[in-house]
Length: 459
Image (cartoon, rainbow, N blue to C red; front, side, top):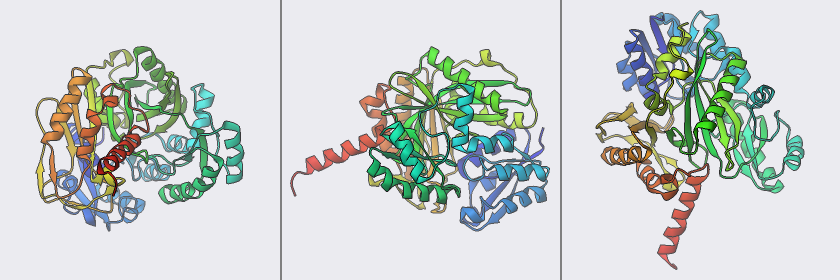
């Protein structure tokens, strides 16, 4: 097993990895930018090294500096967390060439699955259903021809992307013509790759993903599913829960078997997530594979009692999974709310500032993953995620009530957050009934705006 690991990330996920390493008796090295010189992850690690100025491209995305930091500190492995370099095959390959273990799947697997159009081809050949669309990135002229063949509405997606970047829903040929330039520009800016493809847009689908773990001995298990349909209008996940209120035992078995089949086919190792869309008829379609730890992994940990980050590290180090599929038992229900420095009522505008008051929630079966402390300054340079509030309950109803209570206890002053909007979601009848779908948040905000305008009356 590794003696020292460098964490090539920041914020709550860097702290999460540091905690797992400490419990495995592994020394840790934190990297930080000049903007994060007072960061909590820097203080909690055994060693810390600055890798550049505040912009991510000069620090957390600076591959030479990060690899140099690993070599200088004697780190045997690098854990990339999520975002930044987590799904960068060039970085993973350079780690290997420098004799440093990349904690994730092999570079060729990241490369094959990171290209969404290539992943669609692989999945189609495996026999797992995919959303109707183009199996390759196309020129604008070709995209128009494919659009006519598939029929509207359609989803424009970035071939190299994820996280909602470059995604657009179009209802007509005219909308497609208007959306393509901005989608291509956003994909180029986000991933350095402007290639696009099209998928048939499923109305009111559920976004459901299956967590997998795989070792170097060919063993692959799935840990059940997560419901991830609560997303911002730009498709950033906000609230996740496990298990999904939509999924029954039969659908769980089918999706789990499909996820394991895909992982075995591509030679997957460590932790990963297979993402699906499920329509109103409970038919599921492959969407994409995330070759990293997910932000929402804690809800799966809560219902399985399996430490996913530890097993990600252990399997990368050559350890064999100590359990089989039949040993994975789902118990109770878990919900995660992502608390971000954003104003949902102003198009999720980001907010920066100094945390001048912080009261953390607690009590039984409440978990908080965060890098915040009183006096911490929220930087404009990075993601708006401040904390992940996770609760567990014997039933979904108990978990909802516990989350409502925990949100009431959680006080953050100094920056605007989405906390109150989470409470609005939790109280909505559609969510309480387990029927929330992709697009629900957008519709909830639109109804809210209409009600406000109606109550204002004529000006």
